[in-house]
Image (tube, rainbow, N blue to C red; front, side, top):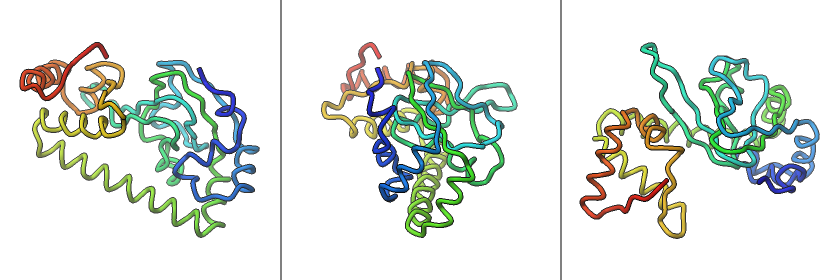
Length: 212
């Protein structure tokens, strides 16, 4: 379930990294000018190419970003957990959403008009510097991910992903992003390849695999 403060309290916006440096007055303004939306699991928030007229602020839940290749294969390019801003690049350059955004769980979202976000960034130097840092971190992460895809084996990339996720929990328990197939899409391989890699890691007593 979604907590009441997530849906009705402007302070939840301060937890979004992109908005973390804003004053209380600005956060209240953004809350008043944004609109709430709820999505159920597997519901599409936006499709690739849709006009990015609003910045989507994910306050609760998880969302997957996917693209379809020329060969017709769907590849997951991102998996985002609240709180965060979704597809910031599309909102900034105005060229349409870069991927299809689909709810993995029940989600609570606020949609902020693009022109308001642009005005905010233009008028507040601290906010502008913060946005640039967030985008730079994103670009660096994507470059590292691309390099890993091009040079590392599936088992190595899977191990790196598991370590990254385990580091975010207190008990090193990692929940798969939906299914093995979803994880395969994220790493750009087949489900069978992921299944074999998980089996090898389990065989070597590096991980324990359970349901989910």
